Image (cartoon, rainbow, N blue to C red):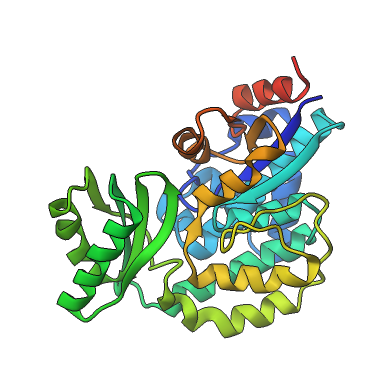
Length: 314
């Protein structure tokens, strides 16, 4: 049995119809979605299966849907490979909650309710249309900070690095005018691409602090347990003790996601990484971070079965 690093995707990995072929083969998928639906009071599987995409992409719907999808995939693989040995885990933004569910640090039903609340608070923190995000390719961190400072000076708004996704791929977030101003400035500075993202708010920026107090209360109301494997957090790329988990998740709300650092911190723990959930966003980022780390997807039937074979050492 091959040791595994467990990675869990965040917003952007969702799509209408995700896990449909897995649900036909493995009963745990619909069972997991039913458990989540019971926890939050509406039919998640119906929304995931039939959309529309505009509804699924609302952050307070996306977050419970993705956490549930990742948990369903985790449960299927754990059932097929019962000797699965996870040496480390990490999740991209929302995916950090999925990692903590997998590590048995939080009950699944509690996590579903928590991330739905998180999504609602993030949506409320900055009214729709007043904040945004943009991806910038092929500028380094210092160049990004320089163009952000110029955009802030020009507009009087806020724009900051929000996601360090991979070398040469950084996402900024802030007030809409400042994000709009960053794009031509980044291109002038030599960016290969600079483009706005289709998101509903300036996630992982200081503008999210408006949601911090209420999310902090929700995090502190949870019955946490010590994770069964180290989960490397976005905010500092360290594995948290039991007592530190709520504070790290709270800081993550308004701090940059350092995915590059999370992969580098967990990298020494195994030679195979599995992306538990829909899509292959993290597998693509990981190729840019560390080409020697094999990262396999698991969000469709063929990928999941291939991942199980690799985990079993076949």
